[in-house]
Amino acid sequence: MQGSSRRTGTMTDVHRRFLQLLMTHGVLEEWEVKRLQKHCYKVHDCNAPVEKLEDFIHNINSVLESLYIEIKKGVTEDDGRPIYALVNLATTAISKMASDFAENELDLFRKALELIIDSETGFASSTNILNVVDQLKGKKMRKKEAEQVLQKFAQNKWLIEKEGEFTLHTRAILEMEQHIRETYPDAVKICNICHGLLIQGQSCETCGIRMHLPCVAKYFQSNSEPRCPNCNDYWPHEIPEVFDPEKERGAGLSKPSRKSLRPRQPL
Amino acid sequence: MPGAPTYPQFPLRAPLSGRRASCSDAEVPACRGRAPAAGDMLPKPRSRGRPSSQADRDGGRGGDGRAARSAAAEEAPSTSRGAGGSQDPRRSSSQGGRRADAPLVVGPRSQKQLELKVAELVQFLLIKDQRKIPIKRADIVKHVLGDYRDMFPDLLHRAAERLQYVFGYRLVELEPKSNTYILINSLEPVEEDAELRGDQGTPTTGLLMIVLGLIFMKGNAVKETEVWDFLRRLGVYPTKKHLIFGDPKKLLTEDFVRQRYLEYRRIPHTDPVDYELQWGPRTHLETSKMKVLKFVAKVHNQDPKDWPAQYCEALAEEEDRARPQASAPSQASARSQTSTRPPTSAPSQTSTRPPTSAPSQTSAPAPSS
Image (cartoon, rainbow over all chains, first blue to last red; front, side):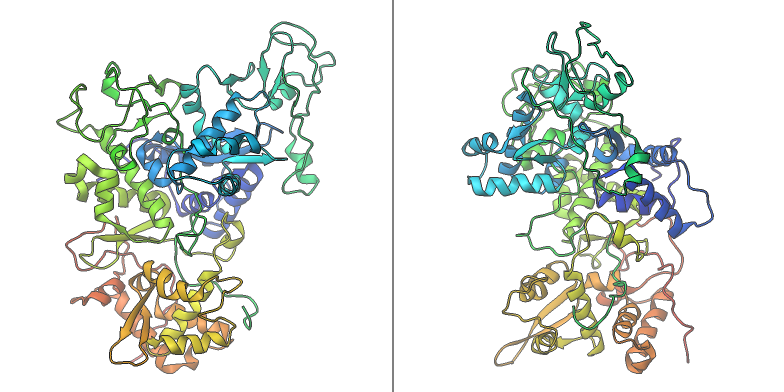
């Protein structure tokens, strides 16, 4: 039975190896993805010119479409780095099977997610999350164990930990945005510029609209008097810099440790 | 590991994707697959995404959409593609069985539904294989197919085709008529892959390779006591926790056995009781005697031909694999291969030989007399 009768791209071993290796990460920064692509070309097809990444990914996605998987491109909320994640588009029970998490672990994640969404800063403290541990479904979990489970989530890039607080990893946002918006329509925050789900960002102290840090960076780029796009009041926060891939690579860091301009003051 | 300066590429064609080749269930599993994926742990029930049932509201089924996992395995999935894909999140999507209050889609299954089933099956196989535990047909039916169980052969065939075409994995039946399956990588692993992986392979593979080598060099079977005598020299003991391997005894006699890399059998009439270790069916599928011999040779910085008996045996196996076998005893069938690459890799439950594709490179020297 032919599954590829639609107008989709063609997979070659270059694409397959790329996909296999990408799957070992789950999420990768753009420069890492490019390096991966180059490697796969080298292994299989030295002479062919390396296709533009966007087209390369698009080609693979057209084939993945029938499998309800997609390589999605996103941008980190704190410093605007482009990243790619392999996301599951079908919210089926298989995702349940697929996750190696027990029922109580999933519930812990859900609780953490809710606390994150409800928070002003987009971060939920470890303490607050651990406080709900006795309300979890499934097997009883002790706080010590819960701490480890949270670490597991961080290791697997579903959560990010910063100074004892947790927020959603970009990977989780990419995979779950649709669902979060459907499930918590009243609690979610939306960016005024890109209209995407917002977990971390800056907000106008007057009218309350919010913007992602990278969106702020782009919107107010080289604007000496930044004003709220909605109410025109003076924008009180520090304007971050637009992410420049060249600068990052030049610094020779694989994981740029930029100061993240996360507004910590509550509204 | 002592001795060998750089470890040569292990000739095990395990799938490259997110795997921990070690498999103790007590370990933290890598959730490279779809870990807390959108719909599966949020309190509100998920929306149902059947294309034809936009208006199909089954009222009154609010409450916790997280029905028991196995029951929820039956539910029709929803897709959250694009902004327009969402529906009323408050509708329950758990199904379990038949509900009296909601009309059920019966009759011919649409292309779309079948496609989604295949997608689920592909994901299921990928995730399950991640643990290196062979996937049983019964699990597939229970957790994925449900009502579609009558279509098992067709859906499996389609899933196998997708796995090969999209990911480069062959779905193979572990042993004929066993109704258990594993994925074999049809891409050859390459040294540089190791640097680019997200999971840094597992050190336990090293131990496995050594034991596989030992077994082959000793005539395809080795007593457990001999294995420990050998490993002792490398600082690996059955009773002592190892810095890298953890519990070597458990690895060799339980984990690798469960993953079907090894077979562990009691030797009758031995006192004290002794066991024998042999290659398991997965090893036969994923690698070859020649590859293992080459690995052993490289570790010793010698040539495979320095072990003439083993070399001949490995050669004979290469020849066997290069031509289709007429008769297929159960072990040999796992090893036989055809020399042409078949268009699909669908496992057929009735064939005695899993269709395989020839390894694209084993440098099998020309057979001598």
